[in-house]
Image (spheres, helix red, strand yellow):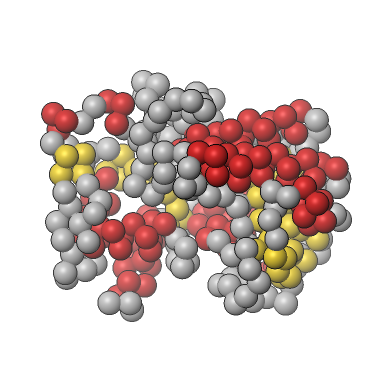
Length: 311
């Protein structure tokens, strides 16, 4: 893969893993970062860091110039809705327009299953399920603000506009992503909160958590790049589903000093409080020939070992 590529969110969790994989394949990677430095995964001589704001049209134009492939992994949880929409939606529109103008042959957009309206009463949320909308309130996971899922849904909508104009894009909607990185939410940030007893259980904690691993995300992207038929499609990347209770209890077991998780009584839990639902990946497996390369158990064992070195 001796081609020039652009990766946004290069110093982040998913972006850095994509950049490292692309560099290992021989691609000449330009990684947009907030600040040039010694970022995990970006130490390959095939990777050049670009410091800048991809939401700025001039920066996006320069970064996309000559890039055959663009991988958009940058996003923010958002301190408020205005910030979340600016970075996640407006930024995606700016970058996608620049990529199309530059003649990009593939645009890979990293999204999330949080775009789905889990309060719409469906038994499952596949790639055609209703998405969240600006101006409405939705439950959100402990890993995100109330704005994240809405802003990422808007990002997909503005991307669709550029796709209709000819941008060859593929969207990946990720479940909770395991894997080691300083910015990892589900391996670094959430376990730290679990240790302090700051992550509650709703009722009996039987809500399902859709899980994947960053290695599986990279694998799915690689499969899509080899399949032109994936252009114009969205894909759920969800390998296993575990109960929120089991997930919290396993993380808690990593710490001898872990405090018990607070419990929200079942009678106080409303259906509209559900922040996630069943997200099947039938399309991903049938159209991409996808199967996970790293299991949930392997990802959790990896995380436990990482934390053992920190405690």
